[in-house]
Image 1: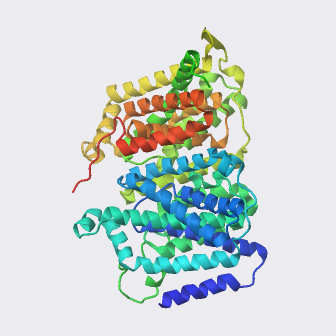
Image 2 (image 1 turned 120 degrees about the vertical axis):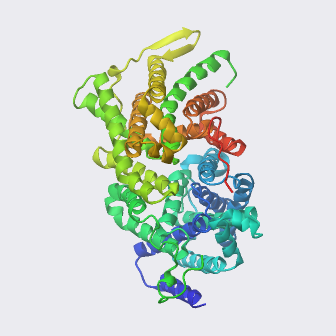
Image 3 (image 1 turned 45 degrees about the vertical axis):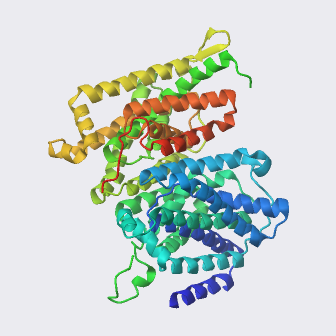
Amino acid sequence: MKRNIFLIIIGIALAFWPLGGYQEGIIILTCINCIAAMGVSILTGFTGIFTLGHAAYMALGAYTTAILTVRYGVHYIPAIIAGGFMAVLIAWLIGIPTLKLTGDYYAIASIGLGEAIRLIIENWQSLTRGSRGFPGIDPYTTRFTAVIIFIMLAIFTFNMLESNIGRELKASRDDIIAASLLGFNTPRTRMKALLISAFYCGISGALLGGYMSFIQPSMFDMMKSTELTAIVVFGGLGSMSGTILGSAAITLIMEYFRDISQYRMLIYGVLLVVIMVFRPEGLMGSRELWDFLKFGGKKNNA
Amino acid sequence: MSFTFSTFVQQIINGLSLGSVYALIAVGYSLVYSILLFSNFAHGGFLVVGGYACYYLLTQWGYSVPFSMLGALLASGLTAVVTERLAYKPIRERTPITLYLLIASMGVNIIIENLFVVTVGGRIRALPRSTFPTGVFNLWEGITISSSDVLSLVTAVIFLSLLQLFLSRTRWGLAIRAAACDIKTAGLMGVNVTFLISLVFFVAGVLAAVGGVFLSVRYSLYPQLGNITTKAFVAAVIGGLGSLPGAVAGSLILGLAEMLTAGFISSQMRDLVVYSLLVIMLLISPAGFFGKKISEKI
């Protein structure tokens, strides 16, 4: 309960603290990236399914919302939600056959699926305008919208992870065989995790479209997917607050280095390698922020 | 486009030529996977290093073609070894989780790509045309084969045979095959595992450089050229990760599929076909055509 109030206070601060236009943009972008990272964290950090294709779900959300608002004049709130559910629908269709794959093979399949979805979007010229991109999206992602959606999803995520679903996910991550012997329906658990994470990424993509007013298939390539998974590892596998902090940190670093944009990607690459070499458990390990605040308190219940 | 026999034969030739370049790259992925069980995404970076080394040796320092090739192979091989020592060794000594290696390798790929962007710029360069034979042979009615196609096919065959000889006839080849079976036991039998892994990376880097030089002749040279290795990786998966004959077979299948799609359906569908093949293969048999069948131990 304390945590929910804490998150709401952060949300109010993010939404109303007086800032210049540039800083507002960074807050919006941070919220968008955090939403996608939370989604990938649920799948990768808490269920142990590594994905390298989640940018495709962002693309699905972005294009669904863009097409609904621009072509059909739908209000942006139902359109964003539709974007999220479009990603869920496709994830469900994809998940039925592919979630049987374990370990590296799911990651490899997700590369293929992610790229395939991007290429379909790119080649479906009549619907998506292909690689020229989709311009003229209403800038519906204001700072207020982005922060509200982010905080709502964050509160939902933290509470979900401590509910039965959260325990189910962690059980099937830690030992899938033991979990299924204990009576968890592990294939359904894995599917739940995939669908939830696809929903987050769809919402995130929809918001990104509204923030940029322009989307293009190349924004959602393998590079972006890798970035999402890398951020989750950077924050700490199995730590949701780590994911949010890591995502915010990476977004801020990348934004403030925009002046030396040539070196931006170089720094990002070095960061990835250095973290993997020196601190592979990420910023927070598998602990949450408040685990540090309890003195000699109980160990994490993951 | 209507189905014509000559287009068909022409696309087969193009597909084999493309497949042979993929094979050189895919074998590198499979070699590393067979030993360390992770997909080394920095492979594309090694390829770019080879391409640029060849370019600068040829144009800036004016060396001959064979010498520049040799320089490219060495540069790329050494990059691979240094990468392994600096980035992968500390990780694999600390944890058995290969995901960390995978992410580190993606980081290395980004570093190499952007080092070139920062130092020499993202400009597209072409290897001097005069240095490689450019003639086009007319085989028969409307079917042509360019000498660079012939050259890449022949070189691929030569290098892959050399690799096969190295693996099957030398002591270190035997050690590598042993390590592919079980690296711990190989270490216990007196194989210097650290050196062996460096050697594997060197060989993979050399093969990547050959692929890199041919790709920069066929297309052109730019820092993002390494992204093409994603397709070679797909080929390695289709053939079965960790299997060298699999990597070659997968590459030829992929090259043919890509070129036949380009010839008879649409060249925009090429990549889609590639990734669909990957997903279909993984669903039918994740271990590919030749890979080791891995079953979960309970």
